[in-house]
Length: 209
Image 1 (cartoon, helix red, strand yellow):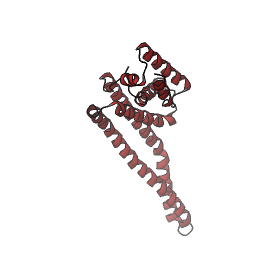
Image 2: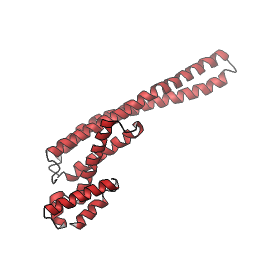
Image 3: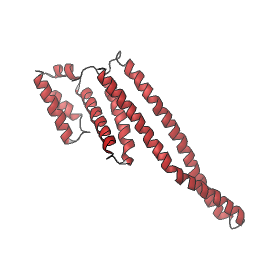
Image 4: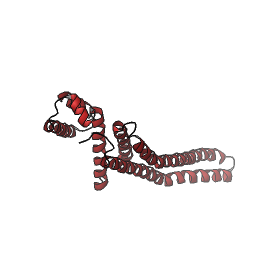
């Protein structure tokens, strides 16, 4: 049993020291109460240490995400990274416990959740290309207008005006683009969390406490 717990702990380095201690104490007590003393018996009951660690990490990530949503304590700049990490941990946890046969339903549901992510990603890439185009056009036209104005004043003013307009649009719409990106990723994260909770309730993870 100690070998199982030690291996489990080695896969929980992403958690804080306090969180690791809570997890280790919980599963040590659980295995002791169940009378499980061997590594093989622990695997039969809880899955491999890697499988269990992935589920624990997903659980903690979801809990942290929900706490941040409730309290609003999470900095806006760090939300996308946390959401992407949560999505990845959920996928690992689901795939880790699913058997080849039992993988069918989770795979279908994951695919359904990936569809909005793909759509959002495509929209973000398209908008990003548009924004980059605005920025480049603004910079190029402003620079060109600076040269033209010395040979043709009104033509130079026109080119400068278009350049500054493009740059102004870029700066004006940039916060909207950021908001769409952050909230789009967060929406997908919430969908994956609902999927994870659904599969957990339906016991699609195989062995679990």
